Amino acid sequence: IGCSDEGGEFEIPVEGRPDWSTDNTADWISVRKSGWDALVIVDRNPGMARHGKIGFKLDGRTYDYLEVRQESSDEFSVDNSDISIGYKGGLVVISLTCFEEWTADTEAEWICVDKQIGNKPAQIALDIDRNPHKEERQGVVSFHSNGKSLTVNVKQAQSPVVEVEQNEVEFDGDGGQ
Image (cartoon, rainbow, N blue to C red; front, side, top):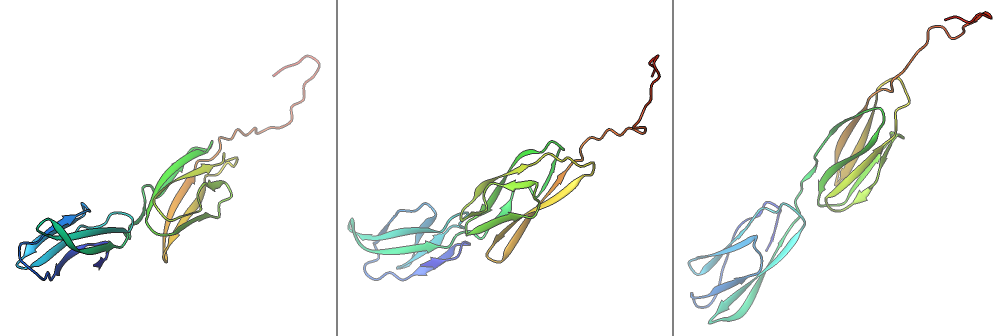
């Protein structure tokens, strides 16, 4: 049986005596008798593609196997899509959930993404440089997988600025303020 990540119920004809039993090796698969047939129930898959085997037994001896293959989850998400950070910058870690090949990139030269490719869920570190400007800045980190895209918006506070209105001061020989 091959099935999607959603799982489902599959009626499988079983030939032979009706007193057969099963030897199931996967906790995400259950088997119930439905007359002479087997009703195979496959749970939803929250992760990587998986494979299981069901042995059909009679009198304690296994006579045949049914292989069950399930596609990986199509979940594609991040745990934080809006990040705000102070002007000093620093390290921010986000969790990416994806069970297929993915890529990450950014056009913001002040954001360094520690992992740019993968094929499973990952913790991604964003190393954000200090903001030397007196304006807030914004950048985007993008993730791509199978024609789908996710973005993480990064907003960084402005650098504290001290401005002096008069930049030249003259003193006479007596000093002063």
